[in-house]
Structure formats: C-alpha cells, structure tokens
Image (cartoon, rainbow, N blue to C red; front, side, top):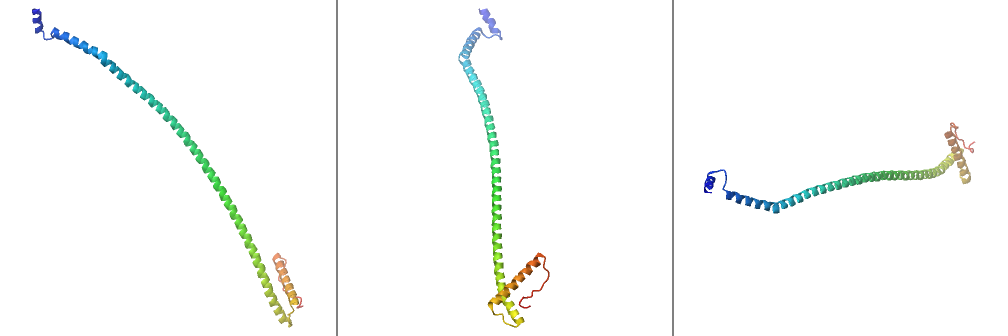
Length: 193
C-alpha cells in the first residue's frame, strides 16, 4: 500500500481516494436534498407560475370578450340614441312647422280682422263725411239757388226736398259715369226750369 500510496502521490491527475469518496457522499447528500426538498418547491413554483399565466390568459380572454360585449352594447346604445335623436329632431321640426302654420293662420286672421275693421271705419267715416257734405252742399246750393232765382228758399221742407233731389241726381250721375254709361252732363235743378 505504501507503494500504491506512493504512486498515487505522484499522479497529479487523480485526487486522493478519500477525497473522492467524501465528495461522492457529499454529492449524493446534496442530490438527495435537491430532489427531496428543492425540486418539489421548484415544481410547485413552476406549476403556480404556469397556472397564473394560464389564468391570466383566461382572464384576459374573458375580459376581452367582456370588452367586446360592452363595445357591442355601447354601439347598439349609440345607434339607438342616434335614432332617438333623429326622431326627436323630426318631431321638433314638425312641431316647429305646425307652430309656424298656426302663427301664420293667426296673423292672417288678425290681418283680415284689422282690414275688416278698417273698412268698417272707412265706410263709417265716408258716410259721416257724405252726411256732412250733404248738409253743407245743401245749404250752399239753397243759398246759391236763392240768389239765382232771386227769392228766398227759406222753407225747410222745400229746401230739403230740393237738396235731396239734387244730391240723388248727383249720385245717379256719379254711378252712371262710373258704370261707363254716362258722359258729361250738366245738372239743372227742376225748380230752375
């Protein structure tokens, strides 16, 4: 053994046998501890990480599907809101048109009423002016006739009959000339003939 031990000392490539045995025993213990305690922990960590990743992917897919459903719902609500807005806009236009028509009808009624009232007032004023002119023309005509004839026409009944006849003849001449039947004519009172 000594010889062999002496030979072993001289071989630099081989370590001593005791170190090899101790190294193998230590390696076997480390290997046992690694497989018994450390490897299952790594496996658990790998499984947990894989489950977390797969769960995250599943959750992401679920959230993506939920987001798509929410997007579709939002688009449907948006389309419904647009349709409702268009209906409201159309209803508002129709209501506005109806209000405009009602206001136009009221304005036309008011205009017709004002025009009728104006015509009534004009007719009333015309009649009043005609009555005043009749009285004034009558008085002037009687005075003028009295001067022409040379006698006084102070008798009220006679004077009013003459004036009325004169004005009636005058109205008849005006109506005849407005109808196109009359030409130029001169009025001669019946008393003056």
